[in-house]
Image 1 (cartoon, rainbow over the protein chains, first blue to last red):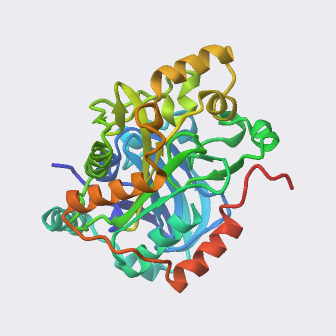
Image 2 (cartoon, one colour):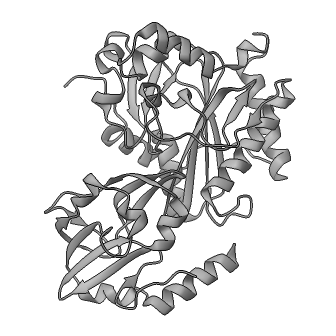
Amino acid sequence: MKVFPDDLLYSREHVWVRVEGDLATIGITDLAQEKLGEVHSVELPEIDSEVERDEPFGAIEAAKGTVELISPLTGNVINVNEDLIDDIGIVNSDPHDTGWMIVVEINDLDELDDLLDSRGYHDFILQEVEGE
Amino acid sequence: MAIDEAIFREVQRTGGPPTIRLYGWLSPAVSIGYFQHIDWEIDLPACRKGGVTVVRRPTGGKAVYHDDDLTYAVIARENSSLFPPTILETYRVISQCLVQGLHRLGLEAILTAAGREPGEGSLAASCFSAPSLYELLVKGRKICGSAQMRSRGVFLQQGSLLLSFDPEKTCDLTLPHREPRAGQVQALQGKVTSLYEHLPRSVTREDVCKSLVEAFQTGWEVSLAEGSLTPEEETLKDRLLETKYSDLAKED
């Protein structure tokens, strides 16, 4: 059974969010990386660009296919994980920590209310499996 | 490409029905994968010189030279009862229908059981240079390449079924020229096949389409209805053509 850290919030698009003040660090969940298989490339937005909640902010190409990354929040990108350029494998090996993707300055903190805590995400995954 | 994405986005927005498109190209074209670097992985000057259109696919994978091929797109919600939930199993289900469609034409294809390893040399830039999991082989050579993308609960799978194959053009347009050309052409010939290598030219493109449609209907136990783009899809297609799918070979 996968462990989803309690200090993160989760979207239904399998993206996690770590909130520190009005900054949100964003990455994909361990479940998402497992579904995708070996990640080959990641396309991320540039620093100072805007991301919009529920809209794509990038894409991942992995062994099993390509997926768009759906932003859980609206805001301004203030940092992008450049370590991914040298070692894309950390998205698979450490998705919840060093495999982070972008940091966003959150426009509206109320958007966090729509995200799930670790228990809620866990329940959501189970519902998805049952729905399949 | 713009039509495929327009349908895909509208299914995301409205939850419309699963869609299969079978189409050809108005003129020879190269489609490159979403993540491919246009200057590194295709020969853009050669495409320009030959009047070959270049477009970027919304799906990943390698470069494909489209001339005498039949391109397909399947678009559906991930939770559609017709498809398993995982990416690989969706590949398998769609590929099985393609196998049955070819079987109806008298061509025996099998699904690959093992995937391609990343970074396997200069041939790796071309989609047809190596089979991925659940792609179609005829007598050990690849006849159809496919790629899939997913977003917001919907998948789009695109693929190219080769009716005939031109290894020299494929080599000249879609492979980095790191090795002697003759060797690359020969290697492609050994790895890739096409429908007309095995079936007579009396089998038309329409025959292939009809056979695939029948196979999809039988395989999925559905009755397919011909459709046209909705006004929303038309509008989106026009916008995407302008903003995303213009010819990358055209110089500013």
